[in-house]
Image (cartoon, rainbow, N blue to C red; front, side):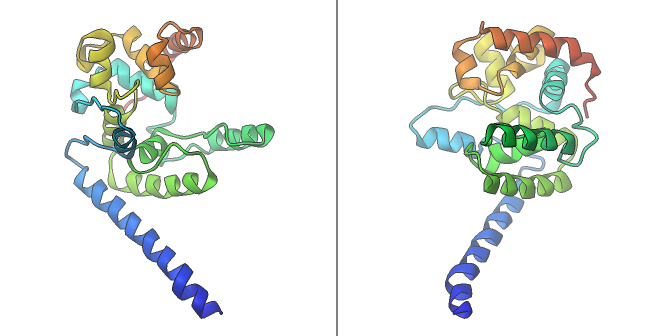
Length: 223
C-alpha cells in the first residue's frame, strides 16, 4: 500500500515541487541583472482580460523618497533582516488567531516580492510556506538593493498599473525619478489595496497613512 501511495501520490508531488523551485531558481538567475517586466500577478491580470501598464526603471532612476516610503511603510527592518521580520510574523499570528482567519500576514518586502513574482494573492498557510521558501532563495541570490528595485518595479498601484514608473506617470504625469516626498508617500500608501485606492485617492485612511509615512520617512535605512 505504501509503495502505491509513494509511486502515484508522493513521488509526483515531489517532482512537481522540485520542478517548480528549479523554475524559480532559473528566473532568479535570469532576473538577477535584467529588467523584470512580468510577474505572476501581471500574468493573472492579463489572463482575466485586463491590460497591464509597466515601465521598468533602474534603481538610480527611482526617487530616494519612494525607496524611503516603501521601507518605512512596508518593512522597517528591510536592510537588517534576512527575509523575515519575526516580530511582525508573531504579531500577525496573534492577530489571525484573534480573528479566526488569515487577515494579517506580517510580510516583509522580500516576502511580498516572492508572492508577486511567483504566486497568487490567495491567503493560506500553504501559500505562506511556499512564499517563505522562495524568499530564502531570493535573499541568497539577490542583494537588498536588487530586491527593493524589483519590488518597486512590479508592485501594483492600481487597476493594471504595475511599477513605480507607471504609477508616477499615471497619477502625477512625471517620472519616478522626479517624485517628491508627498507624491512618493501617497503612492506607497496605496499598496495594501491599490485597486480601491486607485479610484479613491482622497480616502481618509489613505491620506492618514500618507501623513504617517511622511513623518517617518527620514528614519528609513535604504540599501
